[in-house]
Image 1: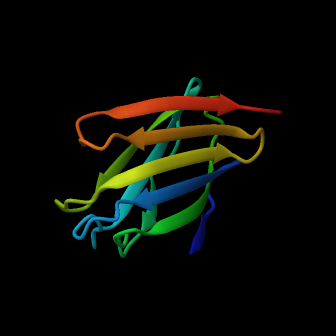
Image 2: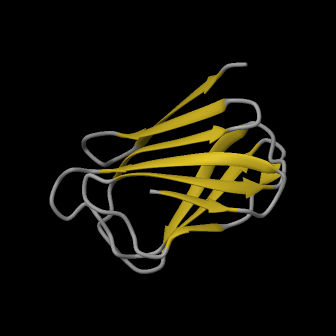
Length: 117
């Protein structure tokens, strides 16, 4: 599934991978904000229907110029046990890729940044 949200001059691809254990999915709408070293992007509702267990979903959003990607904020409309195991954000204008992994114990998120031109 590839959804496109247009609101700004810069285009970002958001890839979400949901855990494979039963119950890791959600029916809650998922909102997403990309953070950068020049500011914070607009809030985008990526999906109104949630994410399936073991799902792999890509979304394209447009945003104002936030500079280099430094992180993100994700929110669910209502409480859920949704478990994203991978979040990848790519600035399609400059190929700035940020990959965030959730560790197996669900206690912390590790952050890695890859940039290429």
